Each structure stands twice: as C-alpha cells, then as structure tokens.
Length: 316
Image (cartoon, rainbow, N blue to C red; front, side, top):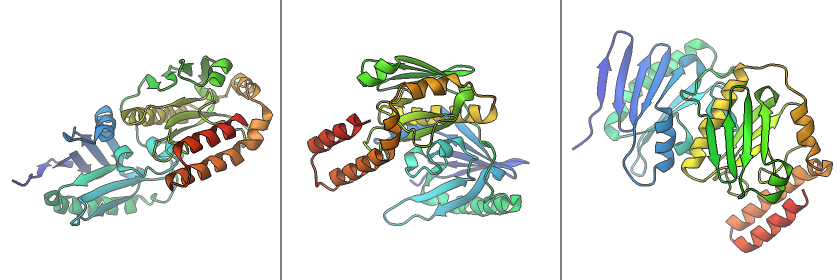
C-alpha cells in the first residue's frame, strides 16, 4: 500500500508529512522536523537528524530550493540551498555539503509525496525571490543549531566547549608529536578565526577531522590535523555527524560573540611548530592529494601509500 502524505492546515502554516519527517511551511520560515528511518546503511543520516530534532530556516536565509523528480533509478529529492554564510553547517564544511547524509537540508521523497511538495517549492522559490537577498552573502549565521553539544569525542581525544573557551584533551591514540606539544590545550573562543569540518569522503587521507584556525595565523601556517593540537580526528560514520554539529555550533557561537582576541594562544601555538613546516605545508598537502588519487586508481597499494604518506608528513 502506498504511503500517504498528510497536510495539516493552520492559519499561518501548513505541514506536509513525509517519509523522512515533516516540513512546516509558512510565509517567512521553513521548519524541518526529522524522524528516524528504520533501514540499514543510514546510521549517519539518523545520527545527524536525531541530534538536530528540528531546524527552523528563515526564508531570507535561503539562496534556492530544488526538487529533482524521481526516475526509474532514483527517488525524488528536495534540497534547500542556503545563502553564503547563512548556515553554520555549510560554512564549516567549506560552503557546500555534497553527501546527502550530512546535509540537513536534503530530503528524499516517495513518489506520492512529490506532487504536493512541488506546489510548496514554487511558493518557497517565489518567497526567496521576494527577499532580494538570495545572492547576497550573509554577515552572520541566520540558521541556529538547535542544540549546542558540550563535548565531542574523537579517535585521538576529545574537545570540550565551555562558556568562553575550547579545550582539547588528547589520548594515547594521538600521534606522539601531538601529545608532546600539548596533551591538554585550551583556546579562548575570542582567539578563533574559523572552524572547519572534513568528512572521510573528502579528506585527503580518508580520516575525518574537526579543526579550529587561530586569528592572526600566517596564511601558510597550516598543520596536518594528525599533528595539529587545534585539530581532533573523528570516528568515521556517526562520529562524523557529531563533528559537523559540534563544529557548526562553535562557528555560530564565535560568529555571534566577537571580541578582542587574546594573543597568547597564537604565539604559543606558532612556537610549538618549526617555521619550515609552514613553508612546506602547501606542497605537502598537494603531494598527499596526488598520492590519494594514485591509491584510488589502483596504481599504488595501500602499503605503498602509507609509506609515502609517512615520508611526506615526517618533513613537517
């Protein structure tokens, strides 16, 4: 029997119940209410959406909305695209989130849900046009992370988000160089320039990570997350979803609470690494990308890749 959709009418909003949750439409806001999917292979999808529960998305925070119709091979897809800088999830991911599991603005639709959603997509698209802001970068996050996590557990340690600071604590799984520099490292939020999150599918060495970048750091002063005390390696799968939410929440906090940065963390951090690391970082990252491509193409083995990778990282 086909699954039916539900439309609840209200004076100001209309709710459409879908296979993956529900969308509540109004003139100035879209609310996405998630629910758990009961099937295999959706651990990341469920972890992210259960942790969020519900997202409130102002229409003026959106750049576009797209509905891809179903085909014989694929289900229909609904994707909301935020304005640049408006969504903390997309910002920490570098601007876009390609994998649907990690994109909280992505819905799969059943065939019988497509027609009703198509109507609201047209209404929403018209609303986005009326704002006149679709192509204007946002000066600050316009979409709130509904629940701010206090701690992120990763493969080589954990990060704790306090009121005014972020504290990294590394365990024995961390690289020795990392532990030698700082087993516990606390950074004032005022000293953080930006936050980044990298999932396994796009990481140069297939290891996902969370990383902060300090205000005033030289452009070339990029340290590989394996060795950077400003980075935490993440568990793959649901751990990547946890990392995305934590990174987005931290980005939102620092974007809304800018104050004069403390100079000490930057000086300390720079002093822990050899200057030549900064000069060689860009070339080393390019070499690692090339190696990963060769491994993916089957030209070199996993063992050869690991040996070469260690040689490159040892130069840092």
